[in-house]
Image 1 (cartoon, rainbow, N blue to C red):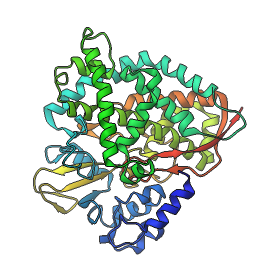
Image 2 (image 1 turned 120 degrees about the vertical axis):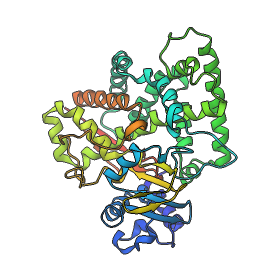
Image 3 (image 1 turned 45 degrees about the horizontal axis):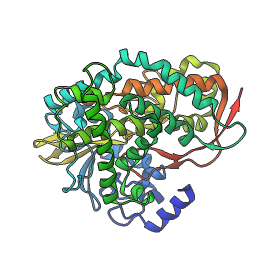
Image 4 (image 1 turned 180 degrees about the horizontal axis):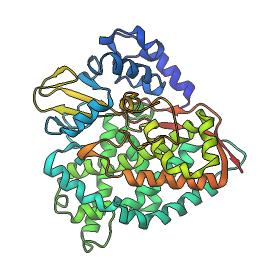
Length: 434
């Protein structure tokens, strides 16, 4: 869908997601009564108007209660230190039953995977898949990734406009997923489709011509495909392969998982490995184009690439939030939180918290301590695939800078209508070789 079509659709909707019918994206954040601010409104992210609301909440009401008409009551946690506090205390703020702000349909009880578990069960399942993305295995995978990056970049059209999202971001991350799952290479784009459907907001699902029944059917489609692969890998000797499916097929904590729990872990690994990295790849191109002085720094000093990767991931914040649920009555930021209350940890806000991150609203590829960000979470739920994400971005930018002086954005980026995945569906670019 084009950006113009999205804007027309948003104009027609008149913001059904807000509390009082106010279209939050069309007004000054200072003009909205504090109690009516709803940062779960997906339109804010499609139109990139969310930052002003979070700036106001960090300043005036950092732990903010919202009784959203669409999704019900929840607390927004918007400051860096408060988010870290919640992450460090999982016994008070649980990842169960889900990390999604909206409760899943009762008739489709699929776990979001071990990310939505606490305690020993979470640790055991997390540790089962960790070897696939551990440094030793990544060292083995690095030359494979570099070869694929080279193939992708060498196959891009010269002197014409093309979609960076499709030709680069999706292709690279989908290939990485296929490798980590040892998934049939010729079917790798199914992983992208399954990830998009699993993570889609209701608005994005409608844009795809699908509804919740279609989402369920798609889920069972990939469960069937992965169940076949699971059975095949279980028959092989343990330790023969470090792909995700083989590790789960032989792991004591995972080999006998119920189908829907297996499905939840697959969804976690697919979405975590696809949407986040892919949108950081696109977000980096946008950030450099919006900050030409930083692009010039990069051209003059490619040794900045590893640090720049961390800054891109902070700046983009590919997952805007995670949810926690209070297990007991407690206090946070001077507010009384009741047992069972939902909390949204807004990483996208914490990553712009200037009380912790100096010049947080600037994109600086030579930023000191650039890896001090919340995009991978914090504490026991810190992203298990963070290293592989950083490695893909680093290799891509190393090889991109070998070939091109600039990847120029030549049209309006099309962003997703989602309060969860901070992503792009289209990014028109043109290449400028050295």
